[in-house]
Figure 1 (tube, helix red, strand yellow):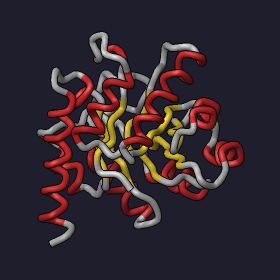
Figure 2 (cartoon, helix red, strand yellow; figure 1 turned 120 degrees about the horizontal axis):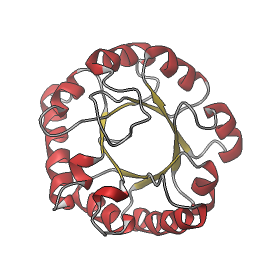
Figure 3 (cartoon, one colour; figure 1 turned 45 degrees about the horizontal axis):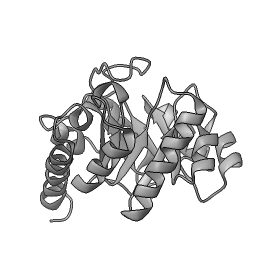
Figure 4 (cartoon, helix red, strand yellow; figure 1 turned 60 degrees about the vertical axis):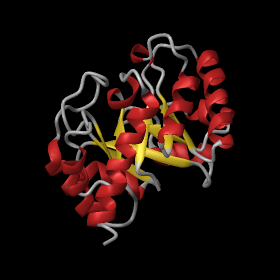
Length: 214
């Protein structure tokens, strides 16, 4: 489904808009951008979501909204990503239908199993390494959690790894069983976001070429 998953963070953008950052991520090779906007109001989030969705459509990429099923539906997003304290996956599926992608944050195999059974299209394990970008996430679940989730869900759904992932450790995360890496600061905090995305995507592709497609 995805190989490089970029998540926005306004505090890292230095005045750049989320839509501008999304375009740079897509240009650099990100397969999907998730709009995470914790402090904006609903009308602002909907406006930004519509802007990014237009860009994603133009570039044949995916766009996902964090937490807000209503914003995802109204903006025409490809999907919504839900945390453990958000609307349950099964209820979200009733609201957004069968076509919309639903991702779920998990920190262990049991949560992953429930998410898949409830209809999640992918699970995101994290935070794999300690991170300051999402303080409400379980911190530093480690590579063992990625392996446990991979073993639990098998090939039923893709496994995304998130939390403290960067160019120095992404290969370890892929080796542990993740299909995709999701990053925040490794792109959003970089002065050249397009170049950062391109480097990460190239590293993922090269690893896959050697270890998965040989």
